[in-house]
Every structure is written in C-alpha cells, then in structure tokens.
Length: 216
Image (cartoon, rainbow, N blue to C red; front, side, top):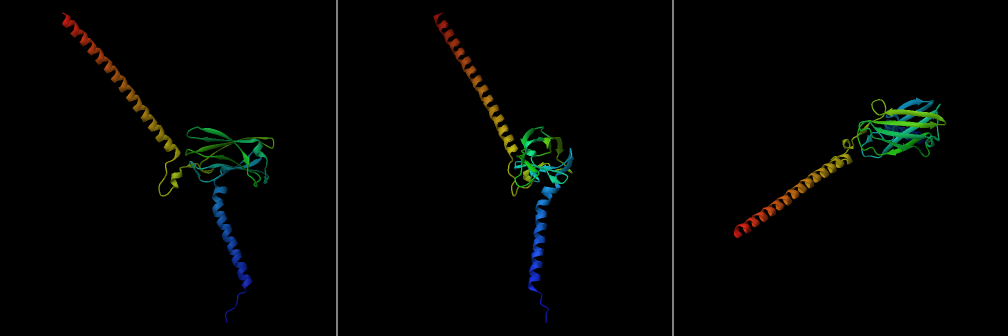
C-alpha cells in the first residue's frame, strides 16, 4: 500500500512555494530599478539615495527624480518644503529647476517630474535645507551611479519612430529650404521687374528716336 500524505501538509507546502515564487518575481521586477541604478551618499549627516525614478531613463518618456532621505536609519519627512532639484544636460548645458514633492504613503521619499528630450549624461543638484541643515550635493549619471538618458529607439519594435528632436531638425531644415526658395523667388522677381523696366525704357528711347527721324 502506498503511504498516504496528509492533505493539509501538502496544501501548506504549495502555499509556501507559491509565496516564495511571488517574492522572487517581485524582487526581479523592482530590484534593478529601485536599488541598483542609484547613487548613495551621506551629505551633512543625511543619507541620500538619488537616481531616475524609472530606469532606464528614455528620451521623450516621462520620468523624474527619485530621492530618498534617511538619518540614522529613520526616514526624514518634510524636506519637500525646503529642497529644490536642478537637472542639467551635460552635453548641451541646458539646466532647469524643479520643485520637489513628497510621495504619498512613502515617508522619506521625494520626486519631481521631468520628460528628458535629449539622450546623454545628466547632472542632478539637490540643494536647500533639511531640518535646518544646509544641503548642496551634485550627482552625475554614469557608471557606478545612475543611468544616462538613452534613446527610446533601442526598445521600439518593429519600426523605430521618429523622435521629437529628429522631427524638430527636419522641420527647421524644411523651414530653411522654404526661406531660401522664397529669397530666390524674390530675387528673380526683382530682376524681372528691372528687366521689364529696362525694356520699357529701351522701347521709349527707340520710339523717341523714330519720331525725331521722321521729323528730320
């Protein structure tokens, strides 16, 4: 006779395995984005974790600052009232300042929305005060910190769509060509008018000469 296995024990084992599998799946989804692609640094006694809110950061896709502040292991709240965030595109030098806001239900975690429109390296500056302590720290994307802004075309399938900067470049090129054609047409009209005027003057001079010759 085969030995019977108690059903309750089997059910418990299946539930435990299912829970472990779900936990591993959750880690695989949130682990790289929230833990690996960020820079950790202690500034004026506060532990800051800084990076993009969504990794990888893609050109033309909504993203934002991901900032976590702790001190001695405790979450620090209220920093949205006194902190600002500057983001700079290193290659172009473009800079913009955004207000920082707290994330609901996540004490010590802050964000600010942005849509990066150029690929490349970026620089984050977090400055202001935290609980009356002056803070001014700069974080630069790259190896060992957080990711650069990447082209979205790397993930598009089956056909990569034109990006806003490419459309803008094409629009500016078309505008320049239209302006050049307009200038050429204006020059041609000017020459035509001048030619007509000269022709009319020539006809008038010829007519006057004919009249004089008849009189003579």
